[in-house]
Length: 451
Ligand code: GUN
Ligand code: FE
Image 1 (cartoon, rainbow, N blue to C red):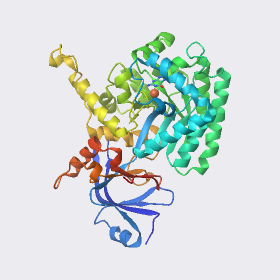
Image 2 (cartoon, rainbow, N blue to C red):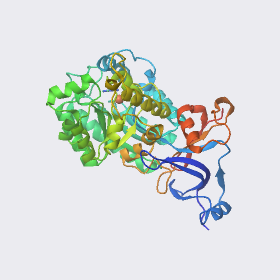
Image 3 (cartoon, helix red, strand yellow):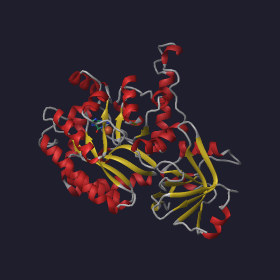
Image 4 (cartoon, rainbow, N blue to C red):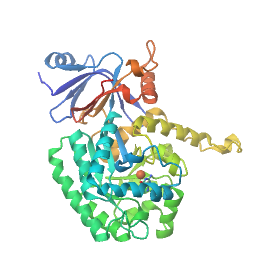
């Protein structure tokens, strides 16, 4: 009988489809040496008892449950230093008053090391096992972020940010010129690719034009070519706010989606943050090219001047995941962001202006369920990145969080013989970092919570 690197026994929640949760009660999860789920066995199934007798088993305690690790599709790692602050002005002012000055400090590698170590550790402690990161324009500090992910066991997709347009970016914080921006990006891609073979959980370079307004046409074109040359992921901000969306319309006479496409920046490995002002045609282009939306509901409440009709775009079948957008969004938790995704969708559906009659106030059929928001935080993120992550199923990486609902410091209000779906909803709405007892990535434990 076969032995595995690890076998876990417990009840797990995973997405079956965007709308449908799958509950795997008392299942066995058999993990191989590569950290992949090789077999999932249900009680009563052939072999279930044999697996139990031939393997040492991690048996979850009563009140503990397995969730897939969360996948955060949009984090600005340097902005962790200002999370929770600087939320009092619109996007353009926020970038120029607070954000660019902060990011410029990452020329100092010691400062970068302190913030990046804290950021990666904090996200792991919040159950986030894979992150699509923006670093800064500095290639050394950006590489350091990739190395910290590698060392701490998080799956990191990291971009050196490009912002080369002298007319749009302050002299203290921009790429020296377009050729330098492209050369630095290429060197960064090569350095991360050199690091990657030694990193079990994976580390990936990402081509990262900050957003169209910060880049020259030459940089956007060159970045599209680099992404094609090295077959790497691409990320940017897309049609985020009235100002950002309007800027691109004025410059190119089209929406961000079509402009990005012209530069070769939309494809199966592309993830675009926010996307609040996408049109029906933009979304069709996303679906056709395999481009994903990173939905950032907390950040959007501050900077996007709108609520994105995410339920409508989910029904169109475009790939969508969830992003915290640290620090446009203040919370490093995708639990918080999943909650906000539901709350914002309900406000979009009902509307908010009480001077309007109820039937004119909102946008019908906009609501998301917490099950759908969970999908976005897990399987939707995995599909967006085209990686086998985000589901507790055979062939997927063993990236999990073990949630304890009965610890005294953060006991969830679960009483008697509650249905498992009800327990799941309470976990999604009420869990705090204290409830996340262990986090595993690619078959290795990367976080334990003692108190
Ligand atoms: N647009 C360009 N840069 C940024 C950023 O750092 N955060 C957000 N939310 N939007 C942006
Ligand atoms: Fe952002």
